[in-house]
Length: 124
Image (cartoon, rainbow, N blue to C red; front, side):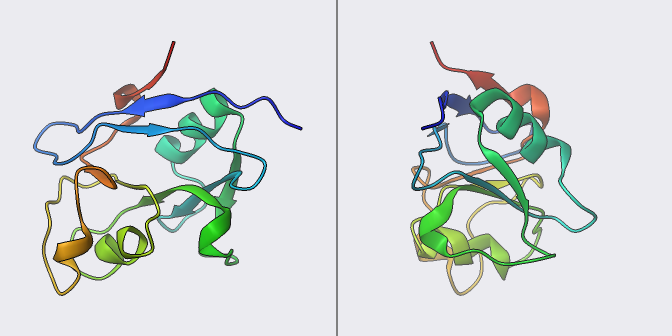
């Protein structure tokens, strides 16, 4: 069994939602990154601090129930609501707020935006 640590993620400048506390588990080890171009710095930082497994969601897919947190780069309406709808903690690197057809699922308990690596800190 891996030793995972928890992080607190707060909204950045102009961001919305959170704070989120993320702690991977053996059942949900993935720091799921869907930003294109590999693992984004925010996802890598979360993985480094928590011991979670960085996962490139553009190269492959994983079941929602394996994801500890999804890091997205959606400034629009599509991906921004998909992960919250599935009850997956979601970090958007863009400063977005609830919008689009899935806005009802985007709650401060599930979503935080405008996040940069400095907005992610160890808990405890």
